[in-house]
Amino acid sequence: MTEYDYWKIFPRMPRKVTIGDITIRDGFQHLEKFISTRAKIFYLEELIFAGCRNIEVTNLGNPFLMPQFSDAEELLKHLRSQRFKDRCARKGINYDDLVLTAITIREPAVDRAIRLKEEGIGPDRVLMMVSTEEEHHFANSGCTLPEYWEESERCTKKCRDAGIKMCGTVSTIWGSPIGGATRLEDAVEFTKRWLEIGADDIEHADHDGSASAPEVYRYFSMILDEIPDTRLHIAHFHETKRVASASVLAALQAGICHFEATMGGLGGQPANFLDDCPVPGTGEYYYNDPRYVGLICLEDLLVQIDEMGIAHGYDVDRILWLGRQLERTAGHRLRSEAIINGRTLKEGHPRFARPGLAKRKNKRGERPDQNLPDGWGAAAVLPEHLRR
Image (tube, rainbow, N blue to C red; front, side, top):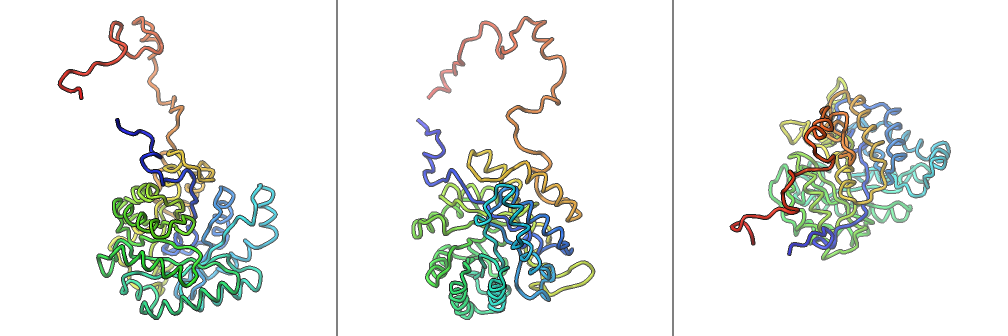
């Protein structure tokens, strides 16, 4: 007899997940339009009020390269303000539950995070990133892998001494947009290296949308066999091929319980054009169509998780409303389907019903709840040749 209980089939699958939002950083970094500081503050606040507790605020790298983040300190200062803390308290939010992350790919950015921490406005957590494929890593950081590992070790120690958590990202797990195929075993080893030098958690990233569900399941099963503490692992899937929801499901089945997403499926390489001016970013885009490089949509992911009966802590309807506002901010249609089609409602959509059904059933002498003709058996009987 087939087992119908999903959690018995996949006993590692969690019943509760953490979903971090990285819209303001990873999402906005790819837009070729400067998003105002006021708008960024609005979305940071609203995401937190809607249930987000792990949020990427900004990038502390050189604003000449990525001018989208020229307001980094202003955003952090706002989120550290007493006014914002008081607003959280009035809404029943424990401010100490929030984890504010800033991206610090290179050591000068880490040093900047530490200075801001000393000033009382710094992030709780920073992030550095290695790719298992060195050409991709060099394109992002300008360093060789050995050179970057040495820098990461120094930075991790600095952060520990300053009371800042370090997230170590491993990228090109399932493939590289520059170097092609990669080995899952290399990503497992890089994960261990991050933990060896003191990282607090690991982002496992599919930055170019190379992942497929079977390989996601295989990889995270390998990871949890080696490092079973699920609190250490965060799954990060991009939507280049629109299959990230399948990757999320595979990761859940393997036992992963922490994911990242962006509203509207925004994100991708840092923009190399902003408003009316070319900017450095990280150079030329890897893709022919730069629209299809963002992360899985937060709105769609929440609907998927919610309808699976997995706890997540968000007000889904508020996030769907917020996603509709973000389309107006971005100035174009984004990639969430849920903000258009909504959730699957158990009560249905009676307003779409064709009039006259009750009258017709009454005319035919049918009971209101009758679905089959009178005289039919209580249960269907399959033809002999179709029976087991």
